[in-house]
Length: 92
Image (cartoon, rainbow, N blue to C red; front, side, top):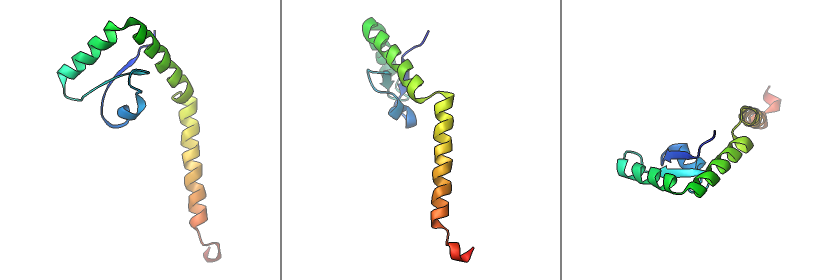
């Protein structure tokens, strides 16, 4: 079974979670806000079901091992291409 995401509002988690679509966010270090977010998720069974499906869909489209590998290879390729553009061929 796949679950919606409940994440603190820090770093990349802030960017990865689409509030109310793939999960809910809470203020890091704030237990009341965490409890509020948990209660809101559990109180909305239909919304929770939609968030779970959306979170899984987002994962399948963007975060699988294959996609991460492809992104890493693109980063390496771009860095190598930029390094080659910056080289003075006449000095080599």
